[in-house]
Length: 625
Image (cartoon, rainbow, N blue to C red; front, side, top):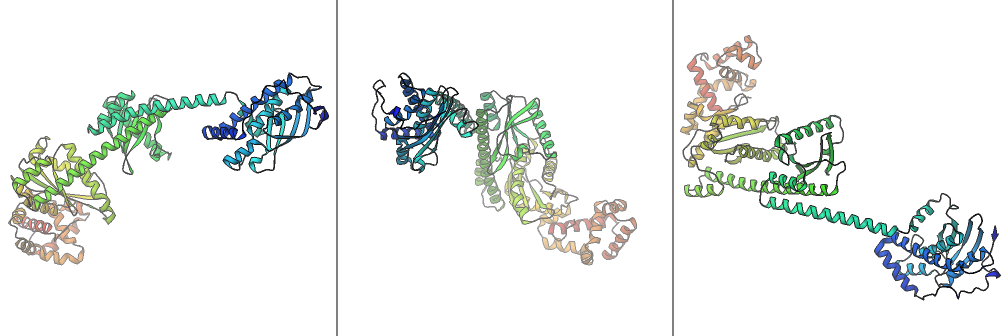
């Protein structure tokens, strides 16, 4: 292997007349070109472009050099740096040149000084944290690879563009670099079709993105029209299904179906039930479920049930879910985009309904408040009833619902009142019954027309029982009592109906939580007389001694008397209801007889005691848990 310095006398004079003509271009012009490439393609792609440009320049010069006659192979190798310097791009100093053309081995090393590429980079971009002489590296790699007949890769280890005093380069064949990771990365930049492929790939991605956006916009436009027309969830599901050619299911947060499109209701119910079971199974395994994610997901529920599901938001909370029943194995971006637009349309639809619902309810509540306080004339009542679509169809009656937590707290009250009213509104909406609803303290006041209830094939008693059952099932944590007034032919009598329903709800307790004013009998008559002093005197005349005696004993005798009357004076039933022995109950009943100085087993006395006790309930003087 030979070692030759650049100042070898054999290279003293060379004839370049036969070389291709040269074009003189200012280095600043190359600097501007370099700047444009970096700004347009980015650093990585620009580097590849400059390397390949330099490679082609080096190959062109090496081919011309090979057409000339040289004393030996080493001369043509060493003329490359001189030709590189003659181009005006850089000053070259060769340090070591060890080459064996027969074996294809090469170790070529030296310095570049005054590199035009480094200077232009410093001027336009400032100091770099990586080497920047890409055209020089490409030129040397292209020239040497052509001369050696195998790929030679040049690596710049120092660079003026990085702040070094000069640039240092090392040339080896691809094989001699062995497993150098940096060289493997460098080789990829020399692929001739790299930019074209990347541009084709980018164009294809842009085309797909354009088509996706176009389709999403088309669906979004249709959905917004449906929202503006206030067609409801069913219309959104149908439009989505027809446009995307996929079945659609819209469910609330409890996975109850709100609407379905593209499949029968019965089939949609089956899919919904299957999803509920899947969710329960996931939760039992304590696995991460779709509820943990706020993103659009592809779920494999079963072999025949795969769905793409995304949440529907109302404010900061999840209101429900919108789903495609999906056939694909991979989630397409366009399907995800369209489904998210559908969820947004559902959110807007729910928000519109809630806003309209709340506004209408505020108007109804204000209307009922004005009627109760007798602020309106009949003509004004008729006018406002027309505005809120409340039919003045007598007879009217009123319901008062008292709802309170078993262990109440301020937080409970604040968190529960609004949802409770909303649930009531949902109940009346589903029953297609228009009612005026307002709230006073822990009581919800409802004014209804009995004729509107009869249209639902329910009489007054059946309707009230359904309403009480519905309210009681909303939460096991609170108690519900309901008082129902008598009927009145005039809505102007609403204040009296309110008094009757309040009196009824006061009589109600956990053992009898639905009380009709018409069943109060004498108590009702006394209340209608509106002479509370007379009522109170009557009640305390009958029961005053017992209550006074019982105050320090947790009212156990008064409770015993109440249960005794409620169980029809049956000793055995009363004992079971109070978990007392028969002998213990008989002892208490005897004490009650002694205190009241009357025989409570006598029918007319029992009735008198019952009326007095109901009066005290109404007056709020007595409460039995």
